[in-house]
Length: 282
Image (cartoon, rainbow, N blue to C red; front, top):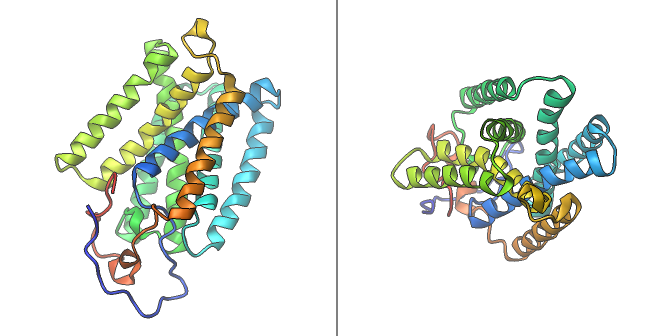
């Protein structure tokens, strides 16, 4: 599915930019899952194996995320290397938010899941009331970009809490734990194919890729006696970081995930509450 071409505007207000997020292609979902796995395995490695501790690891990655976001916000278009660096760092910080609540403050995962669900609903509500759209094809102003990254951060924290809570309830081994989020994502994609709202399906799938990637990381890194492959968190992190780098380099060269120029036009903004072009996969 692609957007119907519209005339581009000869001039663009200074407050507007080219769309700051990539097209939702298969590459988008692959890198998103890889980033999620890195977020889980890298945080665990630095926290446990290196011995930095949860608080120090959180401070380090929060500062790194703040620096990356400054670079991202200064750009006026989508740059793959910068964008996906931010996603990797958000994935780590989102994981650490939940881990701090659970491990340091002893907040039950059921409560953490509920709180982040409410926070996510509130962010969506405020975003929609201000912008009249939740479409990721319209991230062309700094307020929208701020809402977008806040939403991404909360989805990572929520996905971590919901995923860990599910594992506590089921007691599944690392391999079996991959099947539940994978199955739910497949059902979400099927619902979209059958006519469910694209924006809703996109964000549901976005949340579900967090436990999918985390469980995949656990499966690869866990000891074989615990049902994993025994790669360890360090090798899992390096493997997935190298894969992310290769895919992002490919996209930087080929521009396969660039939003079509016609969709950058100001006329496409604030037109519809839900953008039918906002699809799970182009």
